Length: 157
Image (cartoon, rainbow, N blue to C red; front, side, top):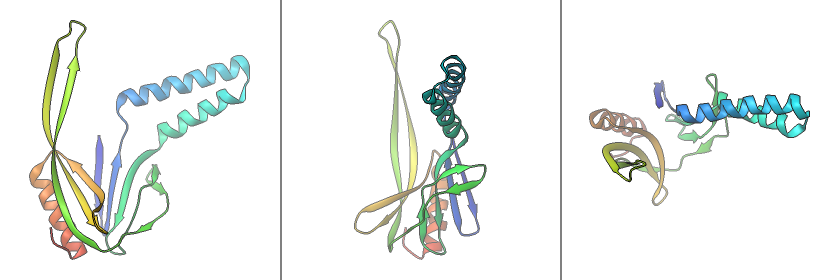
């Protein structure tokens, strides 16, 4: 699941963890606590703290359109921790359509494939370098958002 907000001149894009990753981190947390009481070792405490850290924080990106800079921080409870990088002269804003294919295999050797289209908004800068701003399955929304970003940056779409 992805969370996206526009706040004044900031674009905040948060990628949340799927449920299976959260379950794995929970098992890692419980296992770390169990082994810390059983063996009283430092590795189990490190395992516990790593599980809590990765469970609470999220990946994402923040673009500051006014000052033309970006960051890819770890986010925790609405606060972002990371360094800002200057965004060079943006050449254009692109909307890229990708076909996502998911293949499921069963025990009886049957396969099932699903296809879906995903639209990605990228900022192209410095001779083919790109920065992914947003990804969605809604075509019209991605085009409108790309127009908004291009207008704010003063570049073509």
